[in-house]
Image (tube, rainbow, N blue to C red):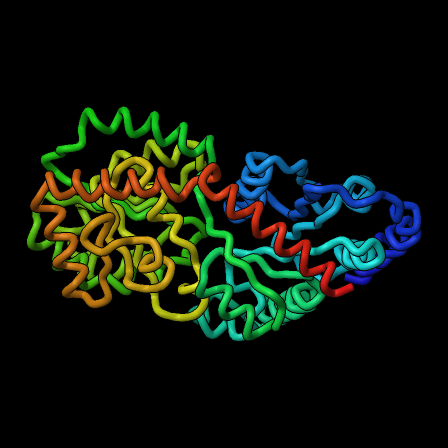
Length: 389
């Protein structure tokens, strides 16, 4: 532990010594953007690489630098705006904040999750955390809030998340939604073309696509009773779950369990093909601020291959789904049963809802469509720095 702290302090000292050599370059319009990230998670893909694509479509010069690349990280001679993805204020980010202040470079903090709320352990069952992990989590959350307070502006993925941030951190907030990239669209188009050959399955499949292991157990459990009823009423229906999940007790009944497939998480490049192989996509969430702060990616990814979605009637989905037109929203077990039953009984309805969702997604939820809004947001953030000075 001590060695780890010393390494971080040495990195901070080396970066601080290097700062004066970077304070040189003049501004350029449009500004040159530098995206900074730590890992290659799905969140990084949506919030860094997809934003980078939007920036390039809008005509910006932009690059992305991982946090561990200190040689490039602190060379800001060709950077006019720093865009940090969900990082805490720590040994490697503090010099970046100092450099941004010295050079009057706007600094953006971006996230699509509620990463600054110290109540986070309350949003998960006890088994997700122990005392040691809670202590580490609290340190990271507080350090994240510190960096957010240092930012010129905050960029969030949904209006709900932006509202929470504006109250909790008191910095200017902007919304830049998660959207689908050009590569995702190409992969989805290929999967959609293949799907058209078998869209009227006689044994319809309800699919649920998860990410992190066991994080979504409670979400699935929230509709366990509804799925039990649906599977009883529709004996040909099947369930297909991706990711490490604990099945709700309602689904362990032998006549239902034998119709459930449990499959591992797939790479995002293979995901469109797997989504296209189901007939109905579900997106349940329990109701708490952490879950309501999520984006509607599960809906968008399914819509891109024309698979209809039944989603919880909460912010990430009620913001983008037109109920009964591009998908179905459900708040109670009865509403879940009704929506799923309608889709299971009516293949033509599945086609109509799926195609409407696909048309709306391709029209409004892509990097190409969002590039103009992204460019306007960057212009407004840059203006904030001028007002500060």
